[in-house]
Length: 165
Image 1 (cartoon, rainbow, N blue to C red):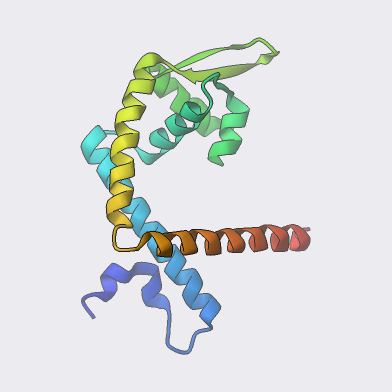
Image 2: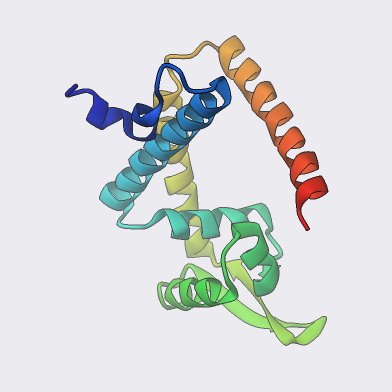
């Protein structure tokens, strides 16, 4: 019973539950555990949050910067959340905000040189942490899991599009 506290969501599954329930709870448990571990390591090692890391990661992928409303969609958060993070990151010198030349009602945000440098350090360690977490799986097992989750994602997208009013 002592180990049940470490299982979290998965501990809710019962032997007679449908396989779909068991799979969902296991996915949720794995995702939650990985996320909590990454959050803790980012906080301890870099004094930052997962939200800030994700924000910087999106900008790293878009060297010319992004409109704040596009960044909000990529991060799947509200515009207010992006504005708050942007204000903090500008203050910290990691991000610059400028008027969007294509739409004067919008702002673009981009990494500063310091932002690129800080994110590169975080990303390198983040990759190592993930390698540790997934180290118990063979390359073949990770590849198979990746493809199976891709099939699930496609199925979810098509199912949810057809059932959403």
